[in-house]
Image (cartoon, one colour):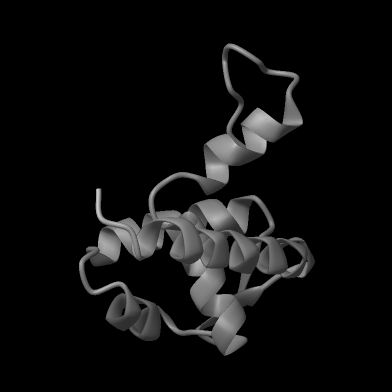
Length: 103
């Protein structure tokens, strides 16, 4: 888990420092919606990302116990399953508050 150097004992900052890295929360969203996904499926969904970027994100999620790999397919671990509804809620909030507005 990432530790925020300014606030090392703040669990909220430390968790957000990790899951707010590019693509991590989006991978949780994709895998949660599909129940499982192969690397190829993730690359297809995230076509603007390189394979190295997606693999790095997956490694970080596996290190934190959010995603697990079995039989070449990624699925949410227990920790990821508890994060998934929150990710969905945040995605919905973003769509309602920012996607329809012009800045």
